[in-house]
Length: 479
Length: 95
Image (tube, rainbow over all chains, first blue to last red; front, side):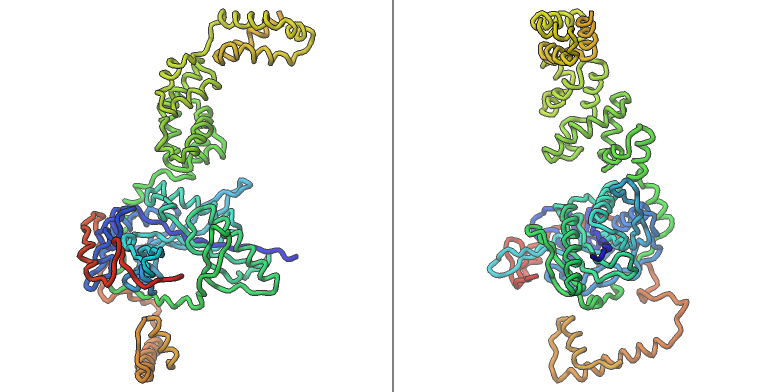
């Protein structure tokens, strides 16, 4: 049986988080009533001219700098010609031969913990199209042009990805990066971040790529993985049965979990790109680039390395806690307010907090338990007011809106029993009530120690200080 | 490079232009003449010349990211042949 090598390249479309369109002063806010944010320029009415949005240029440059790319001093806008009702002008303004960003790269982490460098061929500015609503309007299609003209950064990778998992890791990395840079909200449900995948297979060791198929409009990480997995298998089966892969555009059907042919892309030059005469070349001064560079935040890789160094976290923990800028900010605020205890803070964030956020599908910024509240609770563990086990109940109460840790501990009477005399009384009662077990223990059944701890803890309603309880119990049983 | 009838038909289709059958030979000739001129220009050594993207030697001016347009949907849709629920209606598009 032949061994195959998979070759994948991704084209990611990130909607830039500008207030207005790329070539007009119409708003870009999501969810507005149909066609209320589509001005004369967006509608392609005669006599209008596009004027480029400075903020879109700034965001593209920011992305370029963050991936170690060249930000072009001169780039050119071109018309990509095709007819579709949600593209009113009959062409999309994009960039072709001279994109604003070229030759960048970023490193992804593979499952075995090693890293792999993925090339980013280019990133160019272009306008988004409108939306076609195919629900039945008496046999017609409805067109909403609010999205027409929204700025997109199309990020094109080299064909460096060798599996669906690598493709997802790369896409997640870009997703995290554009959010760190605050150039895209990354909202995949709303279509702010989506991708096309070019997939081909070739015999292992070959240096000639196979014919590729392009899977369009994948809008979740899961779909990207499944669609690519399916496509790889389809192509291998096809070739092994003596068939040939044709170059075409395919759509992923999430319900059926398969890709199907959309249209043959026989001739790429059907788009007939040419420089847009309505737009002069974009020239970016070195001073502009330097000003953008000064606004770059600490990037994910650097933050992760710092977290490992500064807080002594494992690569995994540091990776989770720097997955978004907001996660990192929450963690650092938590550690600072908890007075150190980096590992304990990481455990609470990645444990109870993450689980609760997941369960209610909330972002870290929407957490009902703030960093200050969580820090307040961790302090009470550290000063022995509550045990780690009771803290779980305190956390749940804080999450449910019952106040901060001190208020919950007070209201529920959860304060740990640390009074030696009180714990001794508890133990005496347990021992007196279970004379047979005491005799068995003293006769050599060491395992019964856990039984006494359990009984005493239960009697204290979980509030006895575990370390003290253990120590006193041992002294009494052995004494 | 000379264009034949099918080239003309394809170009017209891509541009969504309806053309008269009897005009096709004239279009083929005219378009072929343009390509011939381009071929002549191709003889010239242009190494070291920056490709021209625009006849004006100026750079693109940039606009501040400030909303300047208000909702004029009713005004714009007054020109549309068919609308419903704020949408422009077009003949059914099937992918």
